[in-house]
Image 1 (tube, rainbow over the protein chains, first blue to last red):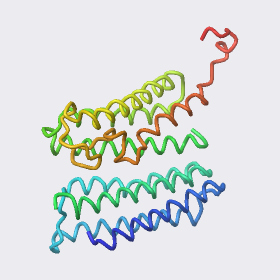
Image 2 (image 1 turned 45 degrees about the vertical axis):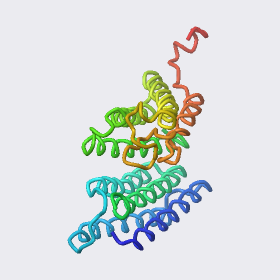
Image 3 (image 1 turned 90 degrees about the vertical axis):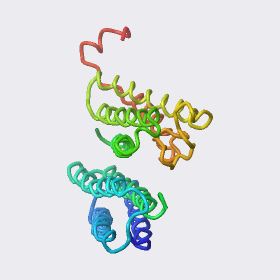
Image 4 (image 1 turned 60 degrees about the vertical axis):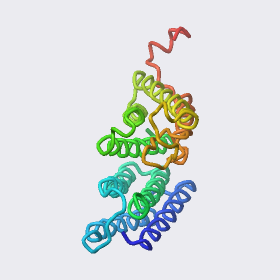
Length: 122
Length: 146
């Protein structure tokens, strides 16, 4: 895991989450902006997955449990797919709010992943 | 499931996922460290899953199940939250750090989960009160007995 990338990811996920919740509360249906924000969060998670696969071999092992780390990462990768799918199936303002909730949940999970990698057991 | 209720279901789903993921890992990785706390953690996870399903599924039976599971959660977070603060030894906890190795969803009233486990059952109950299941037609005329 790369520390600045974790920070970037948490900031982007928080921003995307707040954006989607505000868009939803003002009555917007899931659209290019909200779905795009969620897609960006998902792409960053996939980059994180690649980093996590390579890092231990490149002399950057996690200080905590790698298994616990992957439980968080895999769940986080599934969340936007589930939320996005639901948003497409049932389009209303609350699905936009839920997309925001997905992003905020991911922000917390990425923060926890950072703790597991850098702090836990160190 | 329409409107703001979907957000409630979503938050329940995320909490169910979080509780399940963490408790499964704790039970596989270090069950012997705090068996009582981790068993409760697993139980809480199952109850969150059932509550999520009960909120989505229609009908009177699921409505009762939703009430039962959500009440159980509120009792759980209050009882376990209090025990984790004042008598952690009862749960076999080594410390009361809500973010630590022994932490469960309900430790310190769900502090490790932004107090969502404390707030969510209350919101769930308010929502259930406003959304009673639709009575079958023959029941609607039979008076206030039910």
